[in-house]
Figure 1: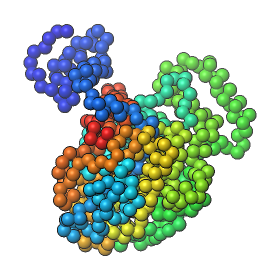
Figure 2: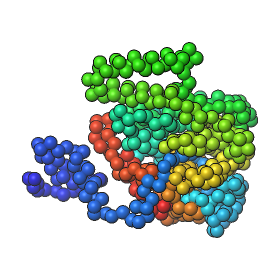
Figure 3: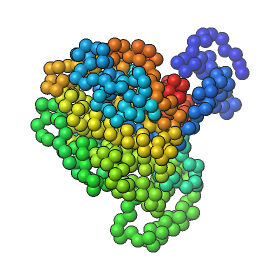
Figure 4: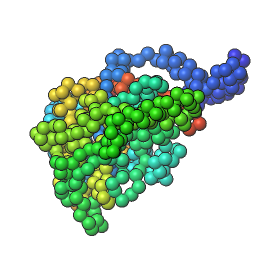
Length: 503
């Protein structure tokens, strides 16, 4: 290679400008940027031997269940109470001990307190964007702006964690599609049941719509009026997240053939399409047709196999088990998620999502903070989350199922007493997350906040670190590259690193 003199300044990924000029020369020999980045990655891996914790836990999770609490819970009234702080910080709710000595959580989570010896609490989550940035929290995108928050298909977005898993584990051409889609979302397309358009976040972005989550829908009515979001909300919201009818069902329209479509007609159509394909195999090299063929293969798999329909049929569970999770949409979604991973699902997301008026069912407590937490949000989450962890454990699935509890950010350390019911507002400098199962440590607390719970005092933890660590536990290289819209390789987890302190 021809040596190049001059500045050896390095870019943010460690590649020098001199290296980039070398790449241009390598192109003459048929070597491109992708090959170069792979060589750099391999060289780095050879220099930095992984720690025993990293090696031992790679791929321990066969599945992942993501519980996303849209609107952002307050760290003080969940997993990082401040019992010694002044009342304007501590608030109305007190701390209670848990099954882990020295670890206290909010009194509104008594069932969760009994299972803290099965999980790791991260108290030092932090980032610079106090916005409803689901896309920032769940993708590797390096920066964020509210201008793209309501634009799910904006080209600046990066792919959702579940979409990355789906893309990197896609079967080779000709291989059968999975009976359970690798990337599923419950209970419905995020944001589709409120009075605003769906927000960005759980989409495949530049990987293409093929790798968007496969969403269910829920047929069932709510049974209770939940506390209002604010005094400005005049209508009552009968919210299924607060309570739903036992007769409610999850459905996936792709798994229900039309009534007039007999088995014979279905098989005949398959045969005809196969004959057309035999005459047009040259089209397989065209990306659009290949993508269409992948869609068709997945659709056939779901139509002709009953496993996904059975997994979504929560009515196969005993009434006692359903009651254990709570007869709420969040609880029944958690139960369906357990059934999906038990049936072979790889990545299942449950979004606690706005219903009716924007925020009518979510955690965005700019007013009526304590009534909503005490009478609605905390009791529902507490019952469902504890039931999910214990159910997975009793079935021998917890050690191989990664369970994530995430949100966009936290809430202000000081209470705003002006709105009725008080308020805490957006805050991203310090907040909490919880990880469990699939190679995650048990009974551990990672990171610490200051006396007000407003800033990280030790061991800051980025949302990108959660992504990288989750990929690692799922047996995927956290530095794996995926192609952007121009075909350039980008690291799917952004600048996140695998955190051994949660392993």
